Length: 505
Ligand code: NAI
Image: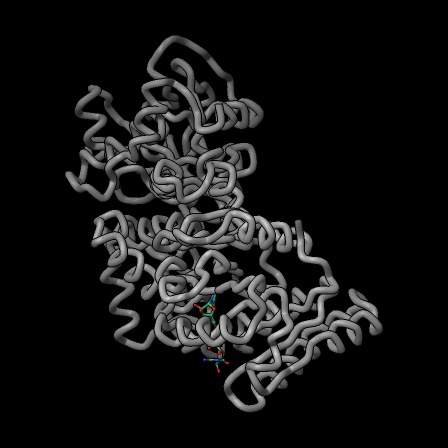
């Protein structure tokens, strides 16, 4: 059951996260004690909340009396002793095991035996934080996302000793505060900071391998993948120091599993002090008058062909065929391995092999691979990767085909899995591994990725839509291409592929 609003909440640490959490609890109707060891910081935190909310009042999105109510419920307190009567204490202080442990020890002395102690840590083990506590069962992770008032996700993290009842109370309370909580076990990165690693890592790797430039990769992730932002614009926003530190922390915590390998490109940005928006330069420039570079987009390609031959079942690309039909082409259907012929070009959805390798292995001349789209009926851009053996005329026909349906084409170099397919397959793989290891349930992993990072769809449900065996093939083929452990398919994905079932079915 959720904590009653009569019960006071205490937030320790009035920085970016603590102030946001205090606002959320006060908006839900609780009295909130806000404490920070830095003199005046708690008062400053409350003033910051008032300023934020005033903007909402000015825009007519909030009543003045509601703002006054929220602010009157937040009480900055100079001494830690003054939080003693709170029923739930959430710490959001500096990310340091020793300092957090000391605070928890002080809180255990001060607070009643049934007070719940929660930590907003993003990278420290809840188990380790509780190890020296008298009653570690009352410590739980309550991991909010930045900015806490806007982001819906809360990871409720159970350490080895955390009581189930305590976790349930915090989960229910987060729901009562308008959040979307999920349960996670205390493992490195919990859900989101672990499962999201491939989103950054694969774009970084494709950039390093010169598949194309950063702006084109970002555009493909947005316009084909329907993610809000590409990896480069997002890491510029997060800050490369922060994002690189999280990657390193997860990489080292998993004993340097190559799946989490950090990127040399990002390391170099950090070393150069190009931390993103906050320093005016990251992958992009943000100074006065800086213009964002445009993605590589193919000019209109001439191709007189009007007949599209659909050979076999196009699988996940079926909606693309439908869109091409609607663009006025004549469609001829016949048996085949699930590919499209237009002029002398053969187009196929990537299966994780390079076009050059697939053309040679399957004896296909003029092969051009296309990328995955979240929804082919909406996608405004798609990546094409021709095989080394493919003629220029065939590449032109492949471009022209998509252009006839109003889809912008970015030609990229022939790399395994292209861009969106490779990103989605590796995200699903990481999610499947987290599920197998009991980090969280399948539904909670998908919910976390949507509510915490605004992904258009949870990676496991997306994998189901694509077909587990296709995702498994993509990963197996990427792994074969690189001969690297980084792409090894997760056991649960492998099992589901052979069982011909999805994660939800
Ligand atoms: P911050 O640096 O903005 O604020 C931390 C505050 O804690 C400072 O005002 C500092 O004076 C105060 N503080 C430090 N030691 C203290 C102590 N012993 N007693 C009382 N107050 C103390 O940091 P931020 O970003 O708010 O992070 C706080 C916690 O939240 C960290 O554990 C961090 O890992 C976690 N977190 C941060 C996120 C982010 O995006 N910034 C997202 C989710 C979690």
